[in-house]
Image 1 (cartoon, rainbow, N blue to C red):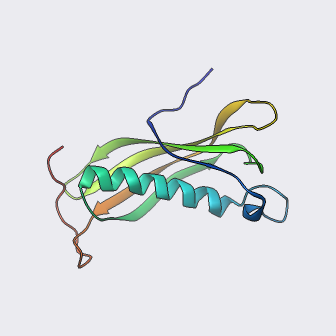
Image 2: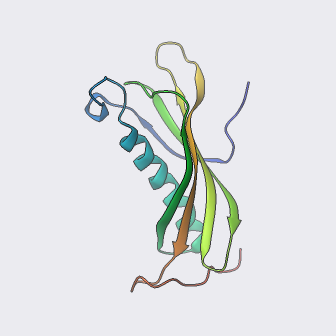
Length: 125
């Protein structure tokens, strides 16, 4: 059975208020949770403020249902002078079946920024 790649960065429960008209959890909510988790990892690596500059290769594999335990895993794939690119995976554990699997994945890029909003170099790892 496949396992998540990266570190567990965020975990929450999908609630009825987050559903779309079809009764599934809204895709925007999923992306928002993934961006929050990726931001935590980016800020830890950059030791300060960061901003999302790109979300690439976002793939939705399965719907998220109300009551699912929603977990986001992050793994830094590469760093540049000011940027951090990471692979982000969202997994669920179904409430009724206890089955766990990946529902969404993508690559998020952040840049380290000063308080004024201009980019700054990353500190050494």
